[in-house]
Every structure is written in structure tokens, then in C-alpha cells.
Image (cartoon, rainbow, N blue to C red; front, side, top):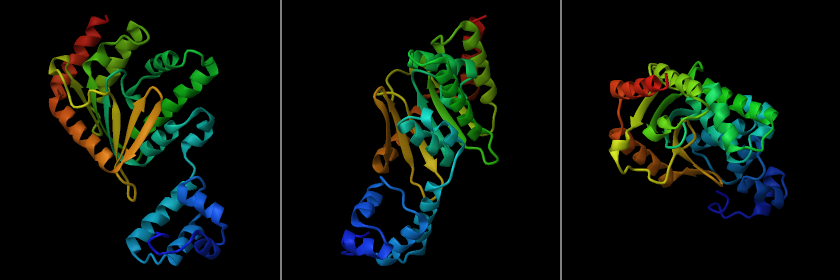
Length: 264
């Protein structure tokens, strides 16, 4: 906006009462701007569109709002903070999982087994905190305005024994129960489906509350990647193709029931 208005950092900085270095860090996202600074910035840059002003005002206010995750900040390293924040702002979440079950659908015991395998050097206290974070994230499914959650789970993730037969049996029963919730859709990509639309692995795609754009998150061994724009749009397209290839409703429930029965 500043460049389009033909203004220098110093000119805008003088108007918003910030030095050019601080203003540059605000523009780059390294320093959060407060609402009066955002409104002054919009004024000096000549931004009169009411919708754009209101959207940026909402973003400026959101930056300073506390969330349930503040008490866990030391345990929410890197992009996981972004992931949790996206879940808190999403109206719809679309999840494709190939290795483990979606975090929002995990039982406490399953989550603990996954986290122990993921970080074998973590202390018992750290693992307990990680598990609590995962359980807290699941509140989005039962909020006053619960998120709509749709997932495609690769059959291989369901067949992988995590924890113990007892842990896995309880987890499968939990999935069967959650599949009956009005805001949860669980579909299964059968091993017989063959090659599919996401050979590179799992991802989540988020439909966001205004003013935020559709966003995607891709987990990698080196950390998570957050994408917007065309890259996020491609994830929604991939999810639609995966969902079309997956088993729904009764067929999905039968797989869950059969796998659970085999663990008896």
C-alpha cells in the first residue's frame, strides 16, 4: 500500500509516529502493529475502501487477542502455533492423513503413543503437555459454533497398531462414534483405491472466517508449511478428488468395525 501510494518509509513513519526501522519490521510481519498504527497507515496511504479497512482492522485486533494456547506457548514450537491458530479461526477443516489419525479425532492414549514415538527424548512432563495441547485443540469440535471437520483417512493409518491392541481398539471405537456427529465426516481411502491425488502425503486445508483467506498446512519431517492463494486452492481440489475416491457412511463404518473386531 505504501509503495502504491509512492511514499517512503520515513514519510509514513513520521505520520504514524514510528521510525523507519520499526515500520519496516511491521510491514515484514516481525513486529505486530497496534490498531491506531494500522488506521494511521491506512489514512496516510489513502485507503478509503470500507471493506478493506474493516478487514485490516479485524486482523490488527486479532493479533493481540489471547487464546487458550497462550498457557502452552513454550510447548508450541514453530509452525504448530500457526496450525493451532488456523484451527481456532477456521469454519471448515479438510484433513487428509496417511500415517496417523487426525489429531482432532485422537483419543488421549493414542495421542500419547504417537507423541512418544515422534519425540523419544521428551520427558514425561513434556509429553503430558503435548497431549494436553492436542486434547485442548479438540474443543473446536464442541464449541458453541463448532468447526465443520471432514477427513479422508488412508486405510493404512487405520491398520497401523499404535500403542497396544487395547489403545487401538478404543481409538477405532472413538472414530465410529465421532462419525455420527453432525459436524464430523470420516471417510476412508481404501488400499484398493490405488494411486491417489496426494502421493506426497498428508495436509490440512482451512476455510477461514472473514477476513482471512483459505489456507493450507502441510506437515513435513522438517516442520510445517503454511500456504495461501493458488497453493491453498490446489489442496482443496486435491481433497475433493480424494474424497470422491474414498468410502463413505456405512462402507467406512464397516471397515472401522471390522478392524476393531480383529483386535478382540
